[in-house]
Image (cartoon, rainbow, N blue to C red; front, side, top):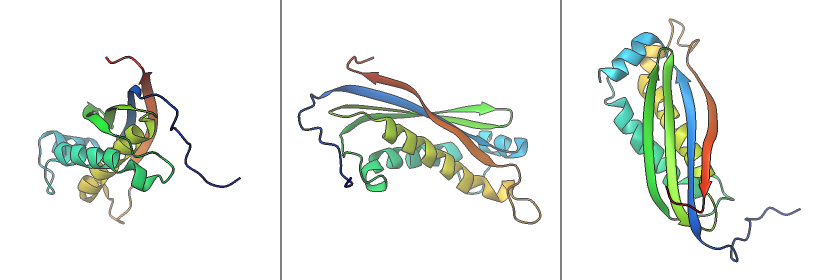
Length: 148
């Protein structure tokens, strides 16, 4: 079967929304640095929010079979836990196809950016990351047709 983008020409435009989440496990000391805005590279959550938004907007360039759809809203939230940071990315559109992949890409980009900004604090003596892990990336909510 040939590779192809799904034809959505005949599908009606409708309100669509998706929320994705993911988690990065970090050392407690690193979490405190993020909370207190003491990370050498800058404000981790501010930069990670921009990374998430850029990821959402660039999803069709990263995942070649997704559609280039108008993004009407991106909201990024963070939750500090004892062992890391949970990211939530909510994406909205009025389009012919959903925004699950955009929300997932946004969450992953925020998580990767967090790792990049704090890697100095997460490395051990050998330069390895024995504690740092990104996991639990998933869509936690999908809405179609009714604006919230």
